[in-house]
Length: 394
Image (cartoon, rainbow, N blue to C red; front, side):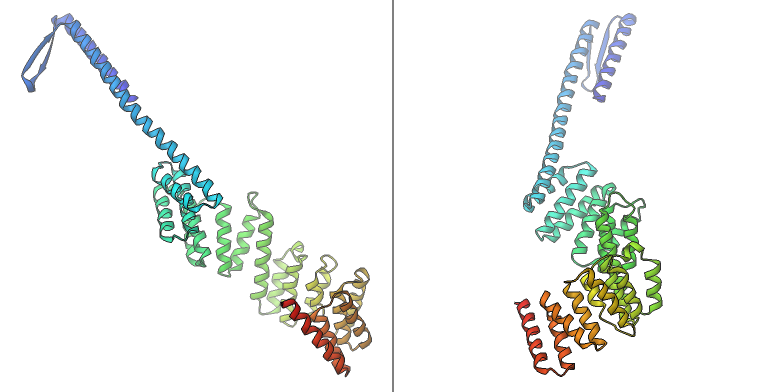
């Protein structure tokens, strides 16, 4: 449009010059040296000719621009149609169609965002079809054509690497985004958490969950789950002495987190592995009134020391609140057997079996009868325990 306006202005200027020439010379001369032609026209004829030629040229330019604009509008419309079609096909699970249409949109697009989206959809569709070479080609093409929106391609690439267990390569790819600076999206941080989980780098996972916990865009229930899982794995695999475990449990685990039964189980097991039964029992005693967890109840009968009588008193208090809890009855049976309170031990174990038969209760009762010299009864319960296990397997 600008070119047309300039041409009109040029021809208007030409008319003005000719008009001035008439007032001074009385006629206009057009010389075409290359053909050695000398053409004289009256001013009126020249002006009319210029106007006609200008109009014809204007119509021609408008036609050319119209054809170009029509082609451009068609290309944009085609690109949008292909992108939307690929998205629909992708979410419907038609990855062949999604890949084909997204590839067309990627080729036609001159928009950075559309290019990035098309490349990501084409690559993810190719990945679902196990076409690795096509997948990588689409990702590289999208990143090269739309560097300002490369995060979509990099996120997809990192996701592919993580799914393949190549966590070090995935971390390198994600860190290339960090090199550009700026706040990274929650999806990028979640992907890095997956990679750090595979690398068993629990401190990094905890640091990332701290960041995500401050974002309203993140799924906070998921963040809490990821943080709890990282804490459990850190407790299970990191500490080799009671002092460092104490420091972590007291300083880095919040009071609210300590009431999580799964986290409490991990901590109690870690203390037991370090032969610190008292700390393990304290964790269990603190948590059971808050979260009635079967695994915590079972642990209470492990790693026994010199305070078992006190444990029996506490457990019997819990039993008054939960009179038909098979796991608690089993635990009390084990505690009483450890203290050689044979009659109570037998009653508690039989009561546990009457509420809910289990391999563990049969085994504990068989061991009790062995200590009491009741070998036939012991064999009976050993066999029942074995039968119970085989039934569960089958």
